[in-house]
Image 1 (cartoon, rainbow, N blue to C red):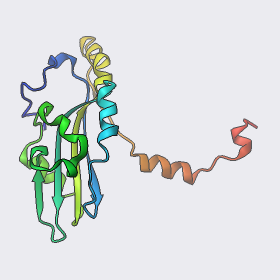
Image 2 (image 1 turned 135 degrees about the horizontal axis):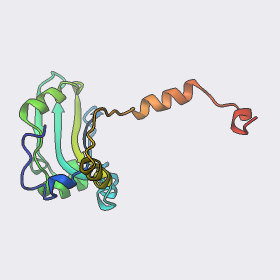
Image 3 (image 1 turned 90 degrees about the horizontal axis):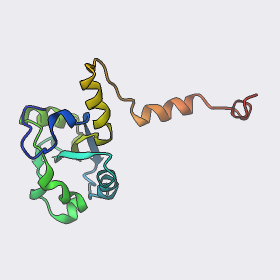
Image 4 (image 1 turned 90 degrees about the vertical axis):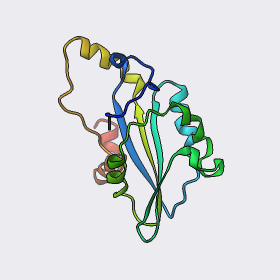
Length: 161
């Protein structure tokens, strides 16, 4: 996914933070761009920088269509069009096809790639100190919620008794 970085990512490479991606599925193709304000808040605060954003539509028959933001009406994507000129086009056609396989038929998905801008100073310091990332992971929110529900805390435990 990194072989297509372009000059649109204007930060010096040494100052880049970690890059993550997600595929958010909206069953029944009920994607309206309502996530745009939450994403804008993260961008405006300097927490993240959007590097790539693509919409994937999978028909009930399993046929897949890919849409750049410029292909879609404002009513379909809300305020997401604001990121159109900043995109770095990090994903290859093979990457997108592979990720689209996870989308259920009859759904629309947003494929989002972002830089964790908040971590860039730490990442640069680690690189300058000779450090290199050897492992990383992510725990899905659903897994955290399930663990909390499976292990209820009693009132005595809350009070430290």
